[in-house]
Length: 161
Image 1: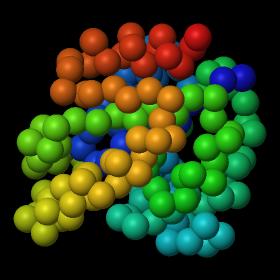
Image 2: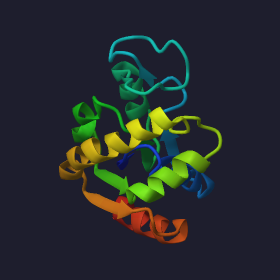
Image 3: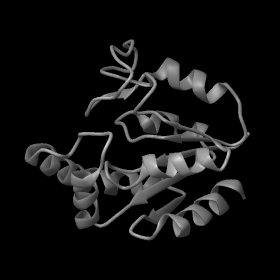
C-alpha cells in the first residue's frame, strides 16, 4: 500500500486536493476533521475539528495509517508530523504565493481560520516560517497557483509511480 502525505500551510489548497482525490475514488483523509488532531499527541481530541497549534493524536493517526487502503492520501500540517515521515512513501508539499494564500483564506467558506485580521496575519507569518521547514522533507513541491486540473495530474503521477 502506498501512503502519501499532502502538507502545506493554511490556504494552499490541501482540502481542495483531498476533495478532488476523493471524487476520483481515492482514499483521502483531511486530518483537520474527524478527530485526528488534539492539543497534545496523547490527548483525546475534545472535538472533531482541529484548532490552530494542535498536533496529530498519535494513536489515532497510527490506526489510520495501519487501516489499509491503496493508495492512502493523508492531508495535514501539524508540529508533530515529522514523527510520521518514515510511514509515508511520498510527502507532497503544496505551496502558493502569499497573495494567493491571503485571497484564499479571506474568500473561503466552510473554515473561518484566517478571516480575521489577526488570524490572517498569523497565517501569513506561519507561511513564512513553516513552509521552509517543510521543504526539506518533501519529495515533491507543487505550486498551487496553478489550476487544479494542472495540480492533480502532477500529484497523482508522483504519488502513484
